Length: 343
Image (cartoon, rainbow, N blue to C red; front, top):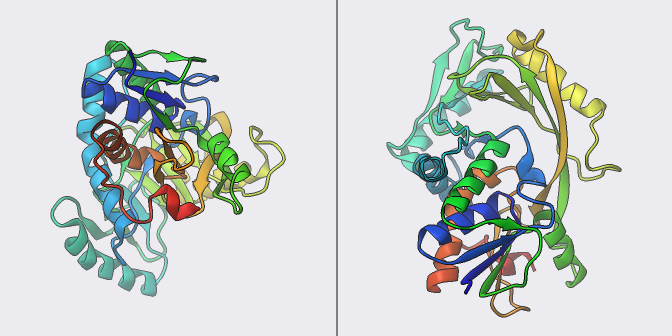
């Protein structure tokens, strides 16, 4: 007997399946394309918080999830023996002018209010390190909340952890028990087809992987791009945000521009060889927040979708909130995250 069927083996589907299985539920995961076949199979993995100001439910949910991430991914790794690439090493950002410097100091104060003692947002002087973004003012923003993960490795670690609980990912099966739809862009397309207005859409992103060893260093955000030093001696750079595109999987000059911007912002990368170019489409809900909750037109069916750009950072708490709903009927989905907020 199956208690929960999860359709979709991206990060939302795998994480919900993992939490449900960890709580003793009998789970099956179905994905015709296999694990991490969509945008969850990307290469960047920036778990970066929203700025600590104008506080709202989305930012509070993300804070909780980022703070849960260390324990969450450690348990996944220990259970299945895989490696997620997760590390909380903070982030550096350049400060470009005096107005931005004043704003950064204001946010240092607001971070104390909203992040409490869990993490810091600070203003520090550049010290000339190779692993620093060029800063016109000589000052940098340094936060200790940002973390990073290797998306493909994280999904593979989840697959191993689920297998250790007796859960395999299959390409086809009959729905049994409660059904969670975590089907990304195709799921948004299905919802769009049955409603009078657009529920969400896919946004293409292009990213690159460079051979450069900056392990144990913080991530950088400079030149409009994320620079993520993975623990395996590579650096990921991304990404574009393309509402309109002809081919979801090809890269082009827009990625060249991203790479160039990263090399200007971080000169140490200028001679680093590009070892992979990646493109994929990420699911964006109309509200821009994750879309969670019951699928009203289908009793016993639920939705977890819309993790555009923040899916891996939101996934630990999304998984626990959806497991509460699926297994216990406890609804702690915040306003703005509900499926009905997008209808």
